[in-house]
Length: 84
Ligand SMILES: [Zn+2]
Image (cartoon, rainbow, N blue to C red; front, side, top):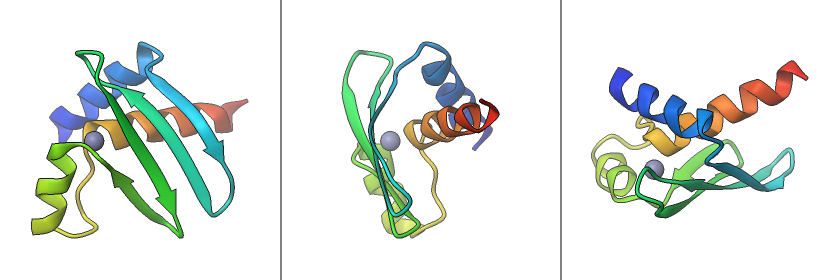
């Protein structure tokens, strides 16, 4: 878990998180991975989703409890917005 959090922090620090939609009940982000690949992270009715393989694979085994590095990157982005 800590490793993914660190990787997420790195993606966020590099400015790899783009906000596409930001509403109370629907948020969509585009996160650029370390190799330039793009992933879509979304939040709908408090359910977070990422379309990366890591998330698809792990969330099947642990539904709702898994946070991939792209989700972490988005969380850092949101935490930063609250500071402003
Ligand atoms: Zn992901």
